Length: 489
Ligand code: SF4
Image (cartoon, rainbow, N blue to C red; front, side, top):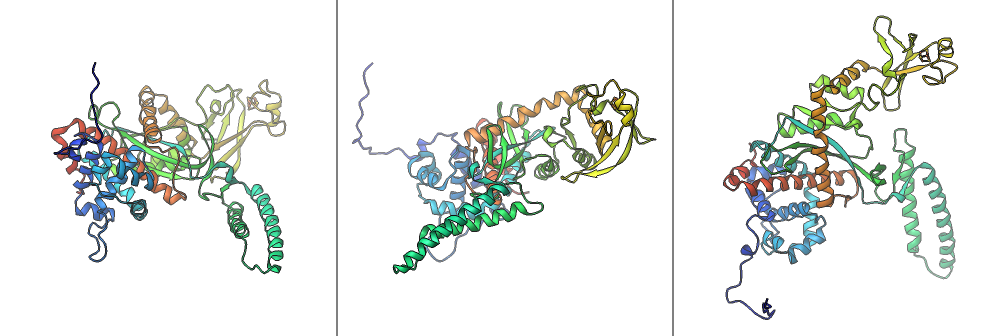
């Protein structure tokens, strides 16, 4: 095969246009079409002014800056400096920015000033999909994932660690001040940089110590990002956040195999999930207007209080019991039978456990306590397996919504619930996979809970745009209909 000649010095009489070089179905074209389809009322709703100031140098158009950020988050370019470079070097970004070259400061200022609009923008993508009839609201799945903050775990301290650090910093300050006095004698009166740095660190440690010592304060504080908390993730402990997402599938066949839409997101610095169940369902309901018929959640969201709350609000939620199912052992608390008339339990050996009082847990849960008889238990053949308590015999601690819990467990054992629950992983795991592996959400770039929330919302918005782009690409005749659905009603 002969080799095709080429010369870098060759010029064209009719150079190819940038438009010709960007494929017709490229994601930048969809992002541009989506952003351009938003009318003035949609921009008002987002709180972004389209008209610039009459005086001064002309500013970059918000449509341009928004499109660059959205496409950046879709493709894993999330820093202002990298986006600035992309607008200089990458053809699709050059097309998207119309060969204008916003620098990283301009890009960053736009992002910083409009972070609060990201939640509204996410809702806009959900509304677009719902109005275009793309979303299957028969089922939705809720899950959380731990995402590292912009901080390392070794800068997280408990109270004890902070006290030790404070002593070290005080020692270092004393040393530096002694050196400084010596320097003053030589005529220098400016604080050495290192001393100023140590004093700033001391203030930082003092604030962190006050936080962990507070009555309802966190157990640990990170000095780089004070809102990040040490939490267990699949890859060990990280100083980060618990990022939540509610996911609904698209109607069968509209976007190929991976048609998934994020309908609500949230970020918390509490590692446990259960407090997020009701707020996330409500947020998804607000975005989709009708809400999904069934919500699937893992055992991390299970609590008796949650079961009672969703029952009261009329939400249908399927989630496994975090205390395990029947059959966990012959003397598991589920083998004890409750008698309403006497407010007592009967154990598997036929002995009574009487009500002894209520106690309140640290998380605010009220627990009813039942005790067996010491004599019955000591003489029972199951002593040692059922209980080892020689003083009080077997003790049962039961939540106040025990009946709701048992009823929910029966529901979870039905064939329909088991079949539906199998969908949970198929819905949420690909979403977290794409967010982390493709969009680069393995760690947040910003610090502080409010900033991280905006970042997660923009990541979710970009995820939804990827899904809508896939629909847009497959359904050419209906493209304008899809984009019209983005307008506020
Ligand atoms: S140890 Fe006590 S509570 Fe347990 S089975 Fe025996 S009698 Fe019943």
